[in-house]
Image: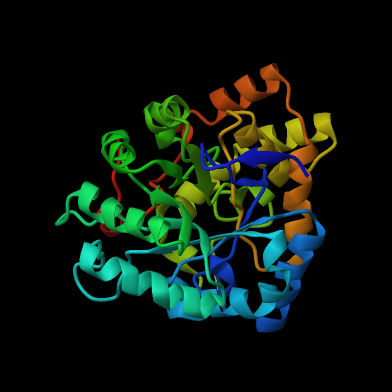
Length: 324
C-alpha cells in the first residue's frame, strides 16, 4: 500500500483510508457481522487510516471500531470527529464542551489517544480560533495527536491554522463534487495540510453498482438530488467515460475514481466508505492504479461541474457547510 503524510503532523497513513459511517447509518440497515469482517479485511489489505465520528450511529460507530480494532491499535491511525449534535442548531463548537466530547469518544473507542481529531462542522456562533484553541489543549494534554477540520472554507482554515497547526481538512471531493478545486485544494497544499476526501466514490455512483433510483429503508440517497430519476439518468451517461479509462488501465471504475483523486496531489488521502469486505479490498487496490496525465485531463473535462445534474445535497444540508 502506498503511504502518505497527514500534513506536517508526522503521522503517516495508507493512501486509501476507510470511511466507517455506513457500518452504522445512512446506507441501509447495518450488518454488524459484515462490518466486523470489513474492518479486519481493511487491515489485511494494508489500510491503516480509519475514519469515524461521535455522531455516526449516535456513538455506535466508535464503539464498533473500538471493540473490533482494539487488538490492532498499533497498526492503525484513528480519526474521529465532534461537533454535530441532534439538538438545534445542530452544531456545537463551544470550547467548554470540547474536552467532554473527546473523553466520551476515547471511552467508546477504548483508546487513550485519538490520532486525528476533527471539528465535524464549524459552529457559526463561536470564533474558529476559540474552538481550535480548546482542541489544541487536547494535544497538549496528550489525548489527541493532531487536529483537523471538516467542510470549511479556505479563510477558516487559515485562521485555524494560525491558532494551531491543522493536519487535515475533510471535505466531499470526487469526480462529480469538485468544489474544493476552486480554492481549498490549493490552500491545503500551500499550508502543508492534507485534504481527506469523503464520499470519493460519489456515494457508490462511480462503482457502477447503483443502477436505479430505488433505495431501501434507511438509505439517505433517496433524498439526494443527484439520485433523483431525471438527474440520475443524465449522470449515468457520464459513466461510460470512466469505464473506458478503467479498461485502458486494467482497473474497475471505482478504482479509477480513486486513482483520479490520488493524482490531484500527494496531500490528498481519500477515505472511501463501505460496509462490505469485498469492496474494501477493491478500494485498497486503487493505490496501485496509475493514471496518465491525459487520462486525468480527460476525466476532468468529462466531469466538468457544468455536466453534473443536481446538487450533492438537499438545500437544508448546506446550512452548516462552508464553501469558498
